Structures are given as C-alpha cells and as structure tokens.
Length: 147
Image (tube, rainbow, N blue to C red):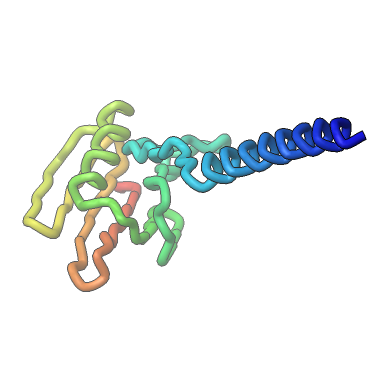
C-alpha cells in the first residue's frame, strides 16, 4: 500500500510541477508580449462627397472646423489641423490641379502660406498659418464666384 501512495505522490507531484511550469510559462509569455506597432498612415488625401458641387472641397483628415460662412456667391471654411502649412498647400494643390484649376498666385514664409486658384468663373483662395504657441496650423479655404 505504501508503494501505491508513493506512486500516487510522485504522479501528483509531477502533475503539479507540470501545471506550475505551464502557468509560469504562460504568465511570462503574457507579461512580455509586445504586439506589432500599428503605424497610422496619414497621407495627404481628401474625400469626395455624394452631392458634389463646385463649392464642395474636401478638408484634410483630422481637421477641426472653426468657422463656416456661406453666401450666394462664396463659401469659406476655417479649420485647425496638426499638418504643416506645406502639407495644406500640397493637399489642395494636388486636388485642384488634378481637377483643371490653374494656380494664379502663391506665396509663403516659414509659417505662412497663401495661394489662389482659378477655373472658369471661380476663384479659390487658401491660406495656412502655423501657430508656434499652440503647435497647430490654422487654415482657411474660400471659394467665390467671379461676376
């Protein structure tokens, strides 16, 4: 009978050791697990709406609207974004030139950018300013109909 208890004791100890080893291994694996870092792709792209009109221009992703004004012959949208004035310039230049607009004039400094585009009887004026205090870019897009 002692031999049976000894065999049972050895089997129980072996099973307990195995379970303990699996627990330690799984805990260590969980504690040291590092998932792949997912990097967000923040390309300079816009989007198109279903009800497009000549006044509908996209805004950069993550832009926060600050002001909106629309009259019969104009539409102006002011927003803030973490993109640089250069990125705002590239964003609208790509969209407008691809759509047949022509650049009438543009100018820039280290923290400010402005451009004017023309197509038919329409003008789009874009300005963007980087504010060093808030570390944000404030931009405005104004489209108006020339008469």
